[in-house]
Length: 352
Image (cartoon, rainbow, N blue to C red; front, side, top):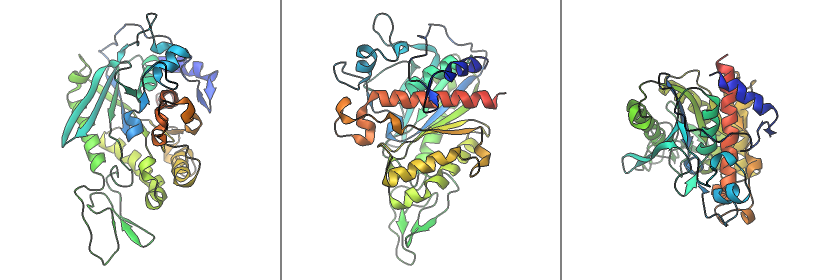
């Protein structure tokens, strides 16, 4: 990982809210493949719809799309080649899988580039990690939209809790909440179902590594990336978010046998996160940086502040979807940028 220190030197002069300036410092990728004698560095991305990707790619004439930001405003020059086409990294692979009707759907499996109609944070994150590392990189995203940490993504071992007279589900419970002594109303789901689906799908990809990184035979879980929060904006789930997040970090490291893998997350509520439950969740996420409250996370977990990346609807492709940051691609690029630099920073610490 000799390139990590070089990247961090660039980082020193390019700070926004403590992290690298968005999109201006990376060179265009060359066409060189990675050295497959080295294990693939796997970064697992999890969350809900904004991690899934809701930043519009086009059209170029619309403010806030990726085409407008890169081709009209000339930002993120590493994404566009001299012919005006999207660049491609041949040392970073991007696999995106999703649970669909009871089985795993492969949404994307290709070299890292801009493809399809929308992007998530993986684009800039992947470019940074590809530049930072000598090893081959696999960005492995396993998620779906409209999922809460307090119910759908509840990690194994999470216990029931009581809030304002109701008992709320622990892991594997099939009733979201109930009043003790009254009949439960089970649903066709259970607490943690999405956690189980997403981790199972990620493990399936890793078990067939050659399908997702051609020619690769070995891998190492190099880090986890989390961006989520909108679906937990209710009194009960917001009150429990910090505890659930701690359990999530520990569970993922255990499930993937990666006890020392860095974990980065962005403040993510799908809205400004400055008031009410959005603020409560943002504070719970930022609490992961508090080494007095969570000393075991010092130097291996980092939450990046992303609320300043919020763009108004007037400069965005969509006027209504505030929960998707008005589908502003620059927001998704800046979140990916902050996450990428944060991961590079933690990798540098954990490999010294």
